[in-house]
Image (cartoon, rainbow, N blue to C red):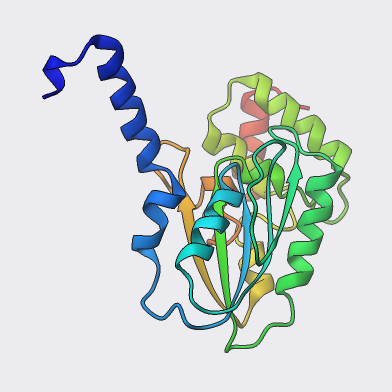
Length: 221
């Protein structure tokens, strides 16, 4: 069937198929749990965060509330949660503000609470909360240097995790003792959950020494 298509039609069909495989409206529903009647707090970060939240709304039967952050120009209307836009790939003040809001939203929850985290590419810069003792300007400077350095995405995110108060599993810690359910659309080779958006809700296998070695390898100040 494909052979009969013109080259431009064939290439377009391949493109549409690939995009469809990562379209939240097409793929998210099949991964949701059976018990969608319960209430949930929804948080999210990434270029697809708003469309993931909208897709979740169309499948979830229980009450939803929360907050997601996406890149400027990537918003999508959601009935039950706020959608905030911030900068990517270098973080800005809006990313820092929304990261603080998301932390406040999930803190103080109980064991009966469910937190749904929707994460996709770009989430690392969109959730920009500096670790204690660091400023946003310092994080912005290192982000720019990393982007120019040629470092791989897993190397950049290793450094970002150790400069952050929310990445590298720290968001999951803030949610305790609630249940955290993470849905991810990957933009990284290998699809490791620890690398997608610097893994805010998964344990971090890297160390500060690993981050320091990466900074040294690329001569980053």
